[in-house]
Length: 237
Image (cartoon, rainbow, N blue to C red):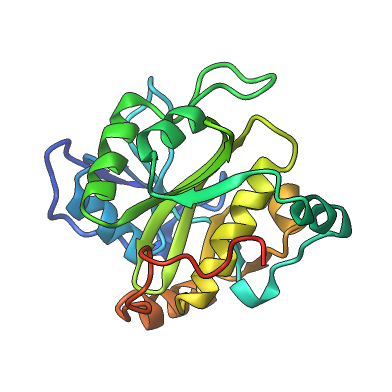
C-alpha cells in the first residue's frame, strides 16, 4: 500500500509524488506536511492536489479519484432557481470582499463542530488573492453579505474551495454567476473536488483522475480572455 509523502515544514522544493500513489481511502491522501506558501499551493493545484485538514493536524494534501468537476456548458439551473433569479433578489459581485467571504465560509456548519478553514488557510489564500490567483464571488442583500464562494484560478481552470449561504438560494446564485462569467471568459473547467449532491444538482459530474489531470496539463498554462476578473458578462441575463 502506498505511504503518503512526508514533507518538512519549511520545504517548498520537494515535488509531490505521482498522484497515482495517493491512498484510495479516504479520498486520495497523497502527502503530509510542508507549508501553505504560494509556490507550494500553485504547484499543488496545477497537479490536481489540494490541502484539507483540521487545526489539530499537519497539512494534508489530497488527490481524489474520481474527481467532481463541472464543465461550464453543462451547468443545470432548475426551474425553481430560474424563477428566483428572474426576481433578481441579490446584487452580485466578484473580488469586492475576499476576506469577508472566506471568513463566512469558515463558520461551522449546522451539526458540525469547528472548521477546516483555519487562520493559516485564510492567510494563505488571501496571499493568493493579492497575487491574482484566488477570487471571490459575493451575494448582497442591500449592504449585507448573504452568500458567496471563493477559489483559485490558474489558466483556464477554476478550482472551487468553499461556499456559504445565509439566504435561500444565495450560494446557488453565486455559483451560477461564477459559471456564466467563467464561460464568457474562456474557462474550460471548474474543479469541485469531491462529490456532493448540491453540486451534482447544478450539473457537476465525476471523471477519472487521469482525465482530470490531462485537462489540467492542457488548460492551466493557457490564459483566459483578457477581460477575466475585470468585466462582468452575466448578471441575471
